[in-house]
Image (cartoon, rainbow, N blue to C red):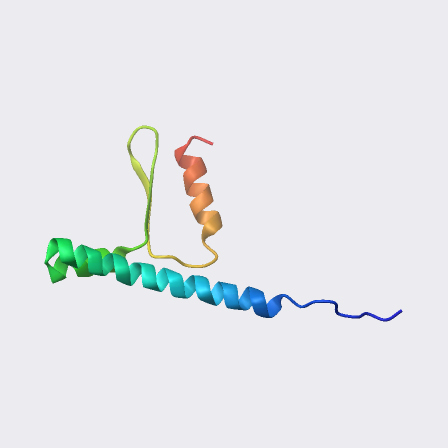
Length: 89
């Protein structure tokens, strides 16, 4: 028995992931530029730019249960657990 590769999507997948990260960076820069146009305040722009993305989980009673600034790969389970806890699950 011989194994023959028919297709290899690894290069395409890698390029797609890289493109997604570039798009995230461009989105943050564009958002920061738009905020600066409306706020005309560099300090406010800096605060908003640093805190993007921001995750806040609030329970049914209005109590903040989880706050996280930025994104770190591999913490998805922690976010999911915080949401389940806030929903009473």
